[in-house]
Image (cartoon, rainbow, N blue to C red; front, top):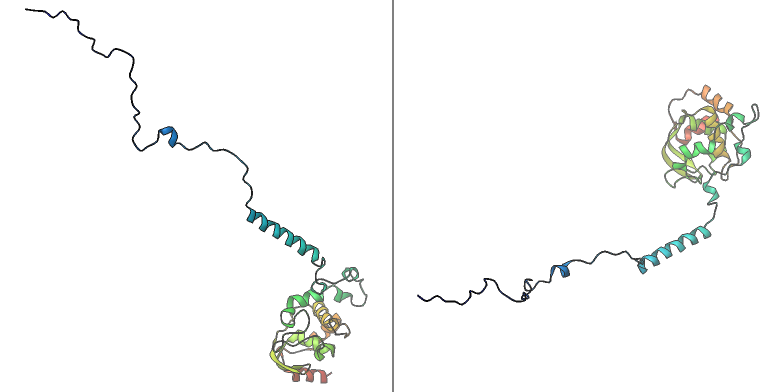
Amino acid sequence: MTIDSKPTPPAGPIGPPVAHASTATPGHAPAQQRENADPSERVQPMPLLAAAVTLVMVLFGAGYVLMSDPFGDATLGDRRTVADLRAAKPGAPGAATAAADGKALFNGNCVACHQATGKGLPGLFPPLDGSEWVRGDERTVINILLHGISGEIEVLGTSYKGVMPAFKQLSDAELAAVATHIRSQWSNTAKPVTTDAVTAERKVSTRDTPFDGGAALKALAAAK
């Protein structure tokens, strides 16, 4: 029996390590190349279009302010003077009426129909400016305010047919103030209406319905 005396080679490979090929999947980049870049901060300039629009708006606003009347339209504001705002002394002429603001009462109750110009609305509401009913006997305007009017009435040669409500819920001083206001505004130059005059008409009147057009108002004036 023959025994082979050659030494048995070691089980593992001998020599320097052998480099292995990349294990990346064909068609795909390595993981390091697939990652996004780190975010960074930098100045982002305003788009030219947005800058141009902003500049135009600023220039337009500045021009509008510079070219506009700083006080606006005087006819739309409160034109009362300091003397008008001072309280009247007790016993002075018109002191009771001064306590009520005729212009404010007109704006709150009458301006929607008769307009701030006093011209009314053609075909709908008669004018107060130049109206013979406003500038005439003060009893007429007082009673219109106290009782209202319905039916046909002619004002400055034009016929109107509608309804004006009564304002008897206002105090005598308030009615006197608004009557005085409309009788002295625009082209009207009639004398003021006193609180006592309104009080007197309220006491003697037994009417509980509106006047039936201009005919009833003429009858009132004739009965004076």
